[in-house]
Image (tube, rainbow, N blue to C red; front, side):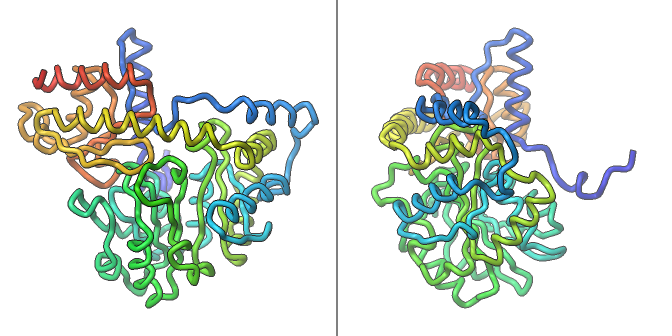
Length: 394
């Protein structure tokens, strides 16, 4: 069987691979604690489930407009105005089958063979492969703990070439939990003004899960003049614990939204009608429970961060949002006799400690690990105890 070059050029999602391996071990009878999956452990709110049931009872089980119903588009438009003072028309909103689908549509709409997309590392695992699938070239800008895992204006300027078509920003970040502040985004905007051909994709999926001492901002809050070349990406999966509903959305300039709509019409078509009704309710409804869950994530973060820094050969700077810790395991890997990289070390932790984590190589940062604290405190305590015992610190 001769598979396409694009199929060979990309890899399976590492987070899904780790979750699947942990599942297989559980099925074989092992007590595995999974810290690999990127989804909240909370239930979807009752009023959101009720909206889904009502939609089914009302017969909303047929095709919708390719880019979303008027109801969900209206909810998104109101949300963008309410939360960020950003104004959009219905034609500029494209609702898709998850945030990944939204980004895929955007990259397919913008990137031709040989075009470049700047991706700061550590990055969400799918960013680079989605660029590769479009025939593009990911230009990875490496950041580290000393900068809080944030790209500087100087790094951005150095990465830009005549082929640069797209910049992908993610704040709060998966996997680091880093949050760009408004003045930092303003610095990046100064660079972008000198390069008017670059489109900015701001991935705001974790905007409501943060505890920084400054409120959330995306680049349009810092630089409204970039509106005509910025695409805001978001969805309902993380903030509202609706991962299985598969609803993401984009707010984009008209020319880009039209191209994304056309591409979606030829691949997924419309997202699930019932999911759209539920998502509209979540976006428009009471958000007090979202704020409470963010507070719980903050508490878990503080516990996990402290325990990780007690492990021999591990260091972890505090996150400011999302629900991940991204510790440096370089010292532990170097001291281990039978492993020499983060991938092998993660496999060893899964086999010996029965704790599933995702190696940092998947995010463009070898030697690190991503641990999700979107699980119970009981699981987190047990997982850190297991890691400490396996690594010889307790």
